[in-house]
Amino acid sequence: MARKTIISCAITGSIHTPGMSPHLPITPDEIARSAIEAARAGAAIIHLHARDPADGRPVQTPEAFMEFLPRIREGTDAILNLTTGGALGMAMEQRLAPARAAAPELASMNMGSFNFNISGAVRALKTAPHDWERPYLEGTRDMIMSNTFTQIERAMRELGEIGTRFEFECYDLGHLYNLAHFADQGLIRPPFFIQGIFGILGGIGPDPENLMAMKTTAERLFGADCLFSCLGAGRHQMPLVTMSAILGGHVRVGLEDNLYLGKGELAPSNAALVARIRRILEDLGHEIASPDEARALLRTKGAAAVNF
Image (cartoon, rainbow, N blue to C red; front, side):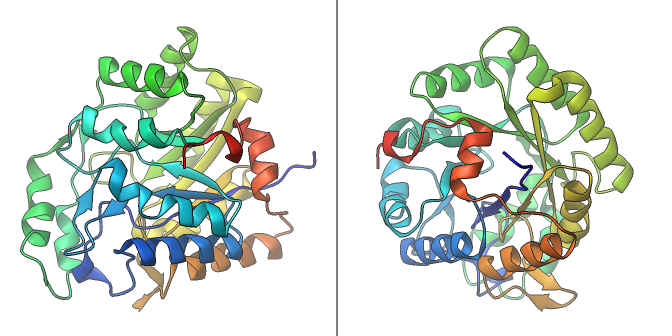
């Protein structure tokens, strides 16, 4: 197979709140529609969180995910990637519940504990229509995203048993070495789909040199078994993911990571962000991976083996 670039799209996430953008998908209908549009625009992988449709707060129940998963699967053949990060402050039992129930092809896996400070996002609140938004963001100044070795091993074992593969989310260089530890233990098998995450306060910064260091380290640790992808938070999204692709990596965009299409211009949809990066990559001569080509690269179990 010729080398193809995988585009992932993160639809709604748990970082941004309804007061930051009217375009953030909240209800099951909005999430399903946005996911299908993003896939049609060129995303081979759709990364999914759930929201309470009443006020937009992050929720992590199988029932919430089942409100949109079957509809997305019916509307697209993209790989559906469920979060196990959930939202800040959630226990691991709660975080794993949707993926255990749905048995998706792919699930995210945070590779270490760290200070996850998004309190600065309060500045982006244009309004605060719900009373949870401002305290949720400001509270992250005193918040640790817990991903202990025991927690990670549990998640790998439980989801690995149902055939789910992982998007390994690495917020710092040390997370790559954590991943190598679990690979050496035989708990996970190659290829390793590694998502380098840049620009979250508490993790590695959004500098081009850091992207080079992360990608080089990942390839040194995992060699041909490494499938490196990149996401950049906020305004760093497009420059960093473009650099990742130029270096031979894959890319992730979407409203979970960035609300803006350009300076001062809110992205009207996830599909608009996918279309922007697809156009950039194709102008650079890259071929975009289809969902089935991404399945072949990641060696997932296939859409027919999920529970939705």
